[in-house]
Image (cartoon, rainbow, N blue to C red; front, side, top):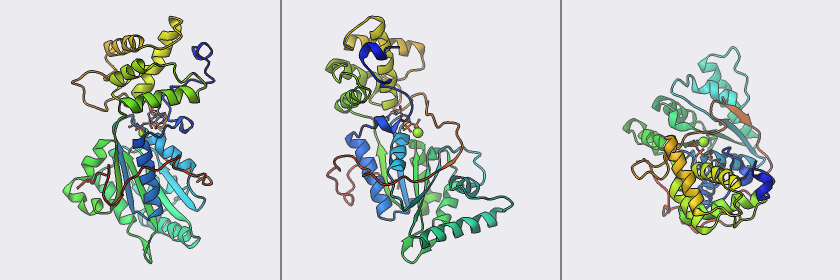
Length: 324
Ligand SMILES: Nc1ncnc2c1ncn2[C@@H]1O[C@H](COP(=O)(O)OP(=O)(O)OP(=O)(O)O)[C@@H](O)[C@H]1O
Ligand SMILES: [Mg+2]
């Protein structure tokens, strides 16, 4: 609707996790570097947590598009409490046939698969998105599965991605053994005001628009309304563009953004900007929601971590958070 008026090739603020629009804020870059560090260093478990809509799935998609050829990846993109047999989902994620196999048979088949991959110098990586829904018993099963080692190498590497509930689950005393195996973890926080401004301008530019379309005050108002949660930023900015188009406004101003925020809050479904609302309570509109597990073939590597790695001492922790 407003695309031609503002000179966009495509909509800049879609709600889908499109890696083409990836903006590596210092926080996203840090998460990505840690993910890559974990993969390279044979981390058994890597955990990335973060509030709703902070960009976890977007990061994972980017990682998948940039993995080395020698990596076999299985992605479970949705979990729920009545998840059932973990191995069944894992087999599906790696495209393995489990017809006629009972639980023991599936275990055998998956271990054989991992060993085969290892023998061909391929690493096996399982990524579980939305892992906050996994029951403690399922996580414990995952730990047992990752106990399969060859010499001193980790045969299966697992990346768990999820909302803060995941971290709460991992803090449970009965999961201490699991928690001790988490070699790398990071909590992805919302963007600050400067990062929000850069994020907005980045998306506008990628879509072919004038990066100055949202002036500084407008960007600050976007941050205030969204609290720096990227999905809410997209929601506010997309609507601001519709309002701007309706008024034939050449620039998006703070007043316009505040109108959007006020109207959205009136609707009751938009938590941003209300001081008493807990952080990260955005409505989930993830495109992957409802999708079952799927397997993903790793693409050739193209240099995954953006232009500059943060100057961070992994051992010292930086923004790392341990669940214990
Ligand atoms: N670093 C980023 N660069 C570009 N867009 C981003 C970034 N982070 C988030 N987004 C955008 O924000 C929205 C939410 O992102 P995403 O679905 O990855 O969040 P999530 O943390 O996985 O959310 P949920 O907790 O609901 O699963 C998407 O529209 C995505 O495109
Ligand atoms: Mg997600």
